[in-house]
Image 1 (spheres, rainbow, N blue to C red):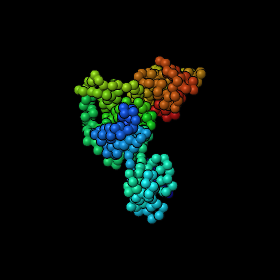
Image 2 (image 1 turned 90 degrees about the horizontal axis):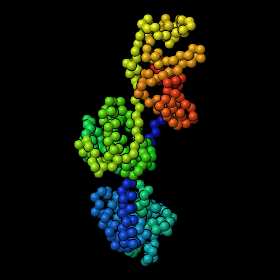
Image 3 (image 1 turned 120 degrees about the horizontal axis):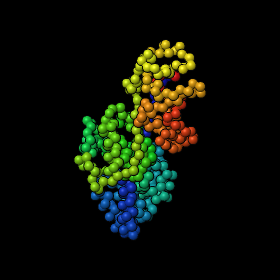
Image 4 (image 1 turned 135 degrees about the vertical axis):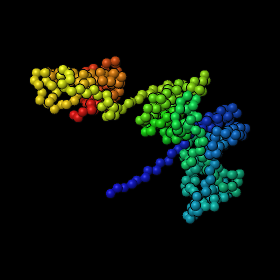
Length: 381
């Protein structure tokens, strides 16, 4: 029986503005020496006039006596409560009279409300006629659920034109910063994009790391040649500077430290195109199946042979050993990374002619045992 399961996950917005609000509040309190009335008015005015803050963020326009930033939230239950305990009034701390109760009753139980009062989590009015409200304090860990509709009218080409790069259709970096920043907020996670396109995902991750000093990583997968003409140049340029015009970096741009590596996966058809087939009768070179001491009967059934592969093989019949110098086939290949992927081992050190892994296994590139690279040989085992 097949069972379908839906996984629901709340995705929260990046809290970059939270840090700005908290830092501004701290600066204002420090300016006035305390969270007095002047400081509260100054902070409230700054929040209200800041065009970069959303409506939800502007709700945090209050400072309490300790300098904490907060907003007030209704304690009204979303639907009418039938249990009388949700209609028990809170006692006003000054007048000592029962406060007004929300029409639907409270959204919290009496015990929860009691704890909130004890922890200064309830905002009371001047007297009992005002309904008490919840005091929601803003912290660096505060989260806000990502909206279901993201308004971003920017065009992706506007991000590529200053870099002097062109791509038929691409998304705006700002949109990806919102999406990627909301999903990987731990600053060291990995985002994978199986359709790399113009490299917008990489651009967004680089920008986010530049902004908050994070160490997020990205993995892009792309099958088309514009990897070399668009993605790689784009990554290099946005790493070098965050400000470009007409393909030139501006003087006031900021660069970041960045490490990027890429893998090219050879298709079966590519391997065949690289092969150089010859008949056994066309060369005096010993066949892979030939024993110099005794003619092998199998050579009669080998019609074609990849000469380049044969040239890369070194066969020691007496020692019953076969080594492969694959640099004769792929002189530009990064063998250290290739062997690391094949063996699933981390690299400890690399020299010009060998690699040593974390378990201290060392492999010389010109004398590799063919079994170490068997997955790369296109014939069957």
